[in-house]
Length: 442
Image 1 (cartoon, rainbow, N blue to C red):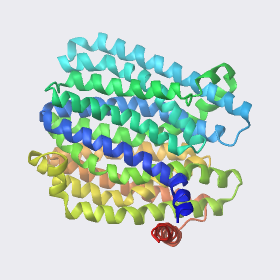
Image 2 (cartoon, rainbow, N blue to C red):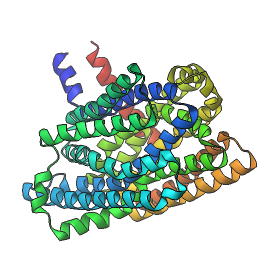
Image 3 (spheres, rainbow, N blue to C red):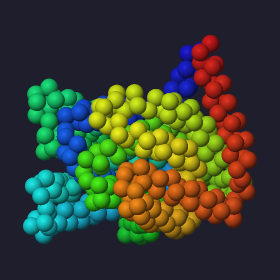
Image 4 (cartoon, one colour):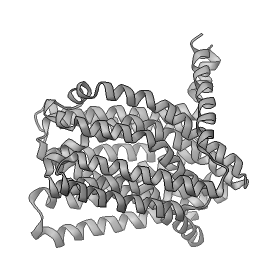
């Protein structure tokens, strides 16, 4: 039993899942503290700010992460150093641009900003700098399949933020500026930890070449749409709600997003391991293997999330009270609509990953831009007709239905994929996972 147990714990999917579970647990605990101690309006502002930062961070991630994994994984030592060095070069240039733009934006827009945003905007660039070593280390470790060390990074960042928020709570110092200082400090702690462990590969910057940097840029600029689309959709939703319904409603709309962390844990974990698998099949020019990998991952994750969705649907109201407070129960119908929509998430997410890995990032980019436009259009029109956050949730369902249909149509042209195989291979993989767990219990 012990050898099997050790083998299970060393499994890259388990380690990837563990890293995301650790991150989600710490995030939920921090969220539960802040949602109770900040007013609805203040918490709505915090949601808008962190969503804005996440968009900047995901632009950088989209530009570099997939390209780094694609060109770094399995490369010879010198070639890997060149890729890492070029990626660092591009990352530093982009981060410097963020810092300059955030400072300039704060200076130019000061007359039109309230006190909170005059304080927050300069910090957008600072946060991208503080988080860079931490994020880069995560990309390198993922490319090297060292998922167990990514867990340590999650603990360092999310754990330290939770501790700092807890200290603010105990000392009665929970204010928006202090929460931001704690957020920045947690990123600094994690980045220093990664630098001390030499996981960032920053010394490889001396091996950079202009040709490799341009190759990463050309590949990554199309991936940005895929990585960024979900954040931009969330940001659009929040801005529609802020403009048409007020910041208190933004705080309410953040509740279903926290429920979705459970689904995102599984999706992010399997996507991290699916990328190298699908990429390897694509590099062998094996469309059948690509289709099987797509169906296996999509089907498995769909089967795994359905019980989670059913459980959260049955206990929506108690879970909202546990996560936040009774004043957030107004979000219960939005939570339920979002949970039902999430059944389609694996189809959409793995379709995007597959299109990127079979060298069709431009198609995935187009699909994601259409999703963004359609979501914004549906959200504005439906909220204008029926001024409630439920309208925004319905807009989310409609754009996902489009994405799944369009993505499947494109996949059929390039692979032998069909819906029946999603169930067939997904169920077979799910049974294998269950059998492994049952063997460990004996």
